[in-house]
Amino acid sequence: MPVKRAILSEPLTKTHIPNWHCPACAGGYLKHKPDALHFSETSESRKSHDHEAWDPDWTDYKFSALLVCNNDRCQEPVVVSGVGKVDLVQTSDDGDYDYVEFFYANYVNPSPALIALSPSYPSEVILELKKSFVASWGDYSAAGNHVRASVERLLDHLKEPKTKLGKSGKRERLSLHIRILGLARRDKDLSDALLAAKWLGNAGSHTDDLTQNDVCDALDILESVLDDLFVRHKARLKKLVAAINRKKGPAKK
Image (cartoon, rainbow, N blue to C red; front, side):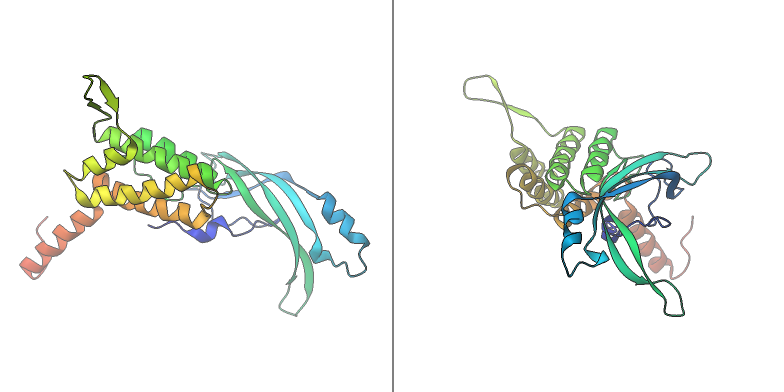
């Protein structure tokens, strides 16, 4: 499934947590740990109170919180921090309004999985992807670097050569770009997909232009690649469809 990008921007409140799956057990959902949400108004926000047009929705906060998995057999703790603000919202069906604090995460550790992580994926690739998930909330350059590293770990797993014999007779290290192009000898589509993920990862290393959507694009690409290589849902479905159409009914198990 593609990254559910909305979870990266949906706010927390004092009483509500978005539907964030537990990063440990994946079966439970995160909830507030009692008395573990803390927030304070920023200095600039406090200064704005002196303005004649000041309104509560000018308020800016910094916050931190500790969440826990609601699965009693798990109870994984998750640290969250970020910024907050105040908005006027309807609080009842009778048309009552009140100011409510909303908190927007830019750090979540450990992060809910942003793409499916099958146990069949190489563990070293999973490790880099989990690091990219944490960075995806606010440090997009770091997220891009971990995406790039996950591509490298995947090539290692696929035994794509890291070096070549140079003219001097010594082994020379191959760049990631050359390793990806070399993979095209075996699978051009796979090579093209990893090249696209690498370009996005490079943007995290060399520029500040990488956005959260760019990171999500890279993760979407890698999810498709990893599924095709290690889970093969599409391949199995294609085989099933062909068998049903051939039999014009249920395929034999």
